[in-house]
Image (tube, rainbow, N blue to C red; front, side):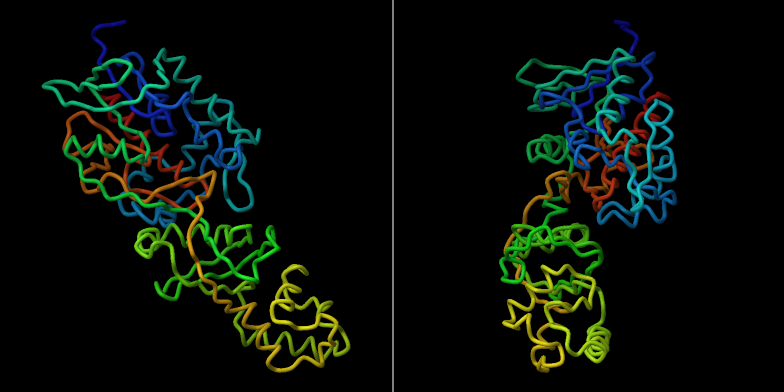
Length: 404
């Protein structure tokens, strides 16, 4: 080991930590990565159902920041230096061809997160950097010229620290003890627990484009929606949960929503229904395919409202029609809790962004101390955006350190 080399300790072997290491200059630095789990990049492995949604094909930084409920202002300068196009170039130049799917999410052509993991770990191993797993940091002590990292497996000292631990309470406490301010973390990207007769017995039913409103917060989102065993999920729900993460935490996840399952104004629905009724008066209501919903869902609406599916459509009463319109376009549901979205567990909260220099992702409080990833109060909706923030922040850190 060259004694002239400065020592870098990277705490956290997730996307941000490993990508930083993969971009550091091995001629100048000795690098040790400390990861508390048995393997690095565990979140990368399971993301996108094991396919790894590596980024999102949005190449204009001004547009890209719109997908970040927290951190959008700060990330603008970061993305002007390293954006999804740069991420794609980085992996493709390391023999990982990528593809853009129709919703603009980017995946490896292999459809395996292992391709992404291999590209980064090969780079780290090639540089002779050391990865130590199952090492849990308990404390960081600022010394005169360096940092002492305390762990059960022994102490480490580093001239430069990269803190990329994610947002576990323990890792936030460690950084708070060093003088940083923590914005209390709350879950983001979660699904809604709802018990309602309409949703019972039809899990797996999906809607191509629905609208969800939370009247109490005067907010709405649209997008695909999915009925699950426990309530509602899908991009429309995940988006609204991300944007309103703090307010929904304050409400203790007890609130009312209104769903328009077909994203059509009620007046248009009435007109379409009446036109169909005039053209097909003898058709039974159960067999009438009027709107873009599944037969299961349509018949569930009839069942819950005690409308006989065998009744001819011409014989429906005004009251029965109004029930159908309400259930399609303005169904009120009570949310009684949340479930974590399995692949993308994300939190809102972390280190206060005012204490970070976003030109290089360094602490304004601690010298030679950098932060990236979920330890910061930055998060995005689902679709590859959270990873993109990690890649961009990590790249900036590596560039700044490499010129030291």
